[in-house]
Image 1: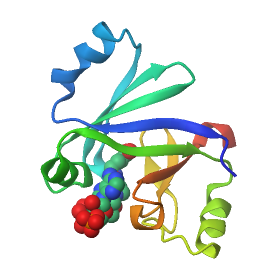
Image 2: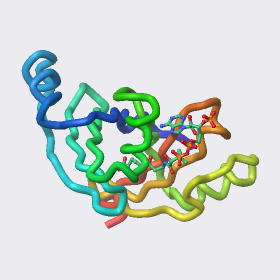
Image 3: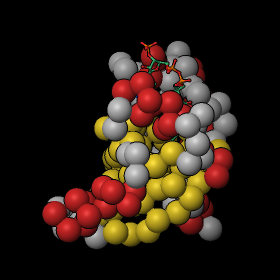
Image 4: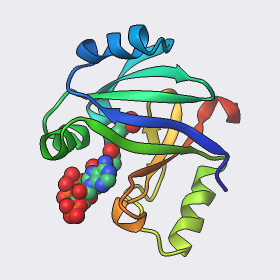
Length: 137
Ligand code: CMX
């Protein structure tokens, strides 16, 4: 069902403040920066070997990431699992009693269809399913 860990989401207060650590100290290549209006975040993707790190800066305090930072501070926010046929994967998870935040895929960063499982259904971890749209074309 799961092909790989696609990326790890890390909540940060300011991309500008933390990027030098990731690019200069850790030496990770910056792949791109984009704003995801639907999630009210600005994200930076870094290449870390086979997987990516997604730094998430909230553009609103009312966003999921804004609320997360307010409650827990900066840190690991979610783990994204790469899948094919995301709608079928969502259906299987629901049949297994997993509570989905997104019952249908929605548009996420990096040209992907995404859907989140509720952390209460996944041992306290916020998992994202993600399917790259390019692959379908
Ligand atoms: N990881 C693990 N647990 C988390 C969590 C996270 N990132 N965020 C919240 N929780 C836990 C809370 O600790 C809380 O648990 P307790 O009741 O034991 O305290 C529970 O989930 C509910 O949290 P809440 O703060 O009451 O509810 P929120 O309104 O903050 O909603 C969540 C939490 C997960 C439903 C919401 O953040 C959400 O819908 N997330 C999916 C979308 C998202 O995260 N988008 C940002 C990334 C976008 C991108 O990658 O492009």
